[in-house]
Image 1 (cartoon, rainbow, N blue to C red):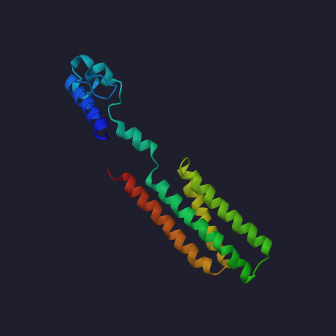
Image 2: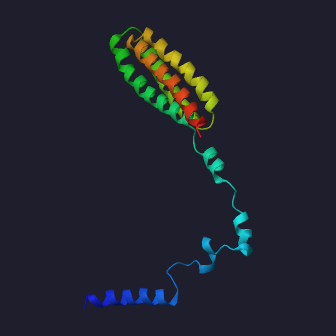
Image 3: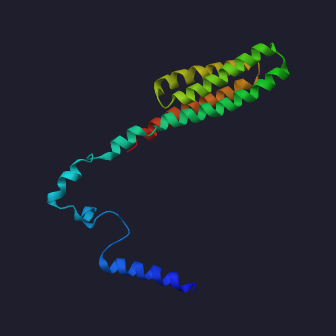
Length: 166
């Protein structure tokens, strides 16, 4: 009894194949292989070269790399706040405000990278200088800031190379 539904399903599929019908709702004359000279009007409605449009909509490599560096830098900034509090070179309120402002600026610039890449590059460069200057409070930030500044410059350079490549 369990074999009966299988046979009925196979019979239906076989009869559909014999009658020339498929399970699709598209008629046979609308496939790309049936686009003859009389059906050229439908083809002309599509853009000639869709690649430039798709490339303009996707984020460029510079934007992506800058956003990645800024997000990683945000993590380092957040982790430097407790270290600065433990070292106790400045008041906790100033350390907290400076750390939070730098972290929020990094996240805002990463989010801005998609819409305003020029502003992101300028703002991110200023942020790199500020992170290096945070070495006054937490001396290891001189080193970490220099590493992120190097990643920043490398990300911009590599992103421009990737965007220029064919």
